[in-house]
Length: 394
Image 1 (cartoon, helix red, strand yellow):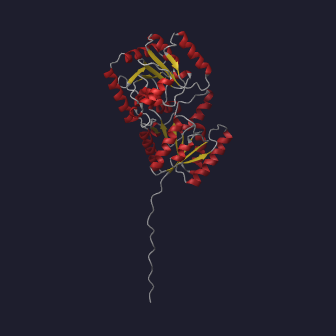
Image 2 (cartoon, helix red, strand yellow):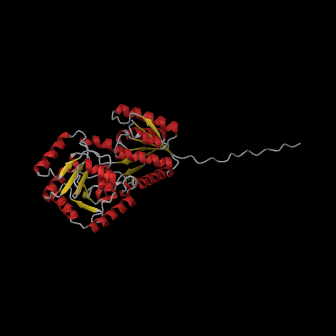
Image 3 (cartoon, helix red, strand yellow):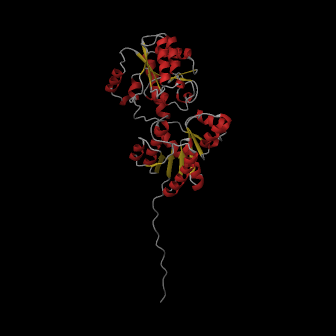
C-alpha cells in the first residue's frame, strides 16, 4: 500500500507590517518644534503607523498619548556628552525592542544620540533642520550643529533654511526636502471665533471702539523688532490708531523697560500697549486690522505671518528669511526692508488708507494662500512622503 505525501498547509498572509517611527526631541513643553512633533504623531497614528516620541517629558506628552502614540521619557534635553552617549545606548535598545524603522531627530543634542543609535541598529535616520542655529568660533559650534545635516533625508522647514543648510554646511541639495511648517486651520479659522471671545479680549485689553489696530505678536526679545515698529509709529505720527505688542518678556525685564521708555519718549503712550502673552490668538487676530512681523533677524518660517493671513489679516513682514515664501507682496500683505522704520511706516500708511473692498479682497486671498500651502495636514502628508521615500530606498 503506497503512502501519499501530504502538501504543506499554507498560512494565509497577514496584514503587512506598518512602519514604526521614533521622533526624538529635548522636551514637550511648548513651541513650534513640539507642536509639529505632536501633529505628526497624530497623523502617523491615523495612518496606521506606529508612532513613538522620546523626550524628557512635559505637558504636551499627554497629547501624544491621547493620539494613540507612545511616549518614552529619556533625559534628551541634556547637552552633557556623557548623557548624550548614554542616551544613544537607551535609544538603540528602544529601536531594537520596538522594531523602529525610522528615527526622526528634531534637535541637535538628541540628534547626536539618535545618529549613534541608528548607526548601531541599522535604523533609518531623518532630521528636521528648524533654524539657522548660532555659529561659534573655531568651527566647534558648527560641527555640533552639523549633526542636523546627517540624515538620509533632511527636512528643511522653508526654502530659506534649505539654502542656509547648503551654503553654510555644504549639505547636498539632493538630500533636502522642503516641508513648510503647518498650522491648525480648525483653530485659525475666522468663522470659528465667536463675537463673545473677541469682546472678552477687547475688554481685557481695554481697547476702545473705533480705532484701527496694529498687532505685533511675538515674545519680547530684541530681534523680534518691537522697537522698529515703535519708531515706525512715531514717524507715522497718528494717534487715532492702537498698537498691541503681544508676547511675554520671558524674564527679559530690561528689554521690556527699554520698550516702555521708548514708547514714552516717542509720545506714544496712548497708542502702543504691551499686553503680555495671549492664550486666544485667533481672537487677538480678529481684533486686529494688520499684523506686523518686524524681525531684524530672518525668520526660519515665521508662524505669525501665516497665522495672521489664515485669519484674513494682511501682514507686513521684514523682507528676508522665510517671509518671502509666506507673504505675497501686494496680494496678502507687504514686505519691507528689515530694521527700516521709515519703510515700515510707509507700508502702514498704505494699508490704513485702503478701502474696505480692497481689504476684503486681500483678506480672501490671504486665507486662500494659507489653506493651499501651510496647513498642518499638508505638512504631515509631505513628511510621511519623506518617510516612504527613505523606506523605499533600502
